[in-house]
Length: 85
Image (cartoon, rainbow, N blue to C red; front, side, top):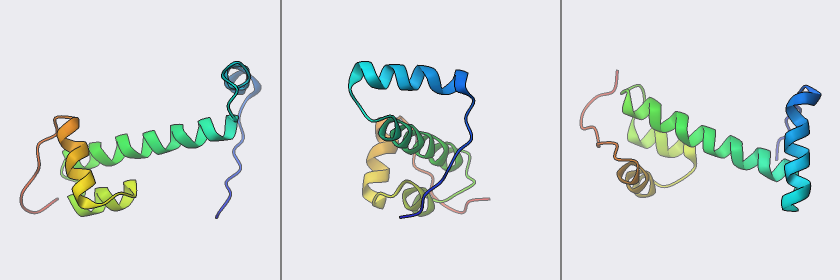
């Protein structure tokens, strides 16, 4: 597994560490989940705008094409038939 080190300002990280303590969760786990959600949001946005295919969106998110179809249905994003730009 690759590791990524980020430079974050103290005022940006303080709320995360405080909430992590209160919720009794690991801050790195929270950041990982946030990144996954951001990736999903961006992949859906790119698919919706026609910039990537359904297959590429599912690959980016790390789920099967059928799971991607279900995700798009949940988000009320219509399936696109044909070429992407």
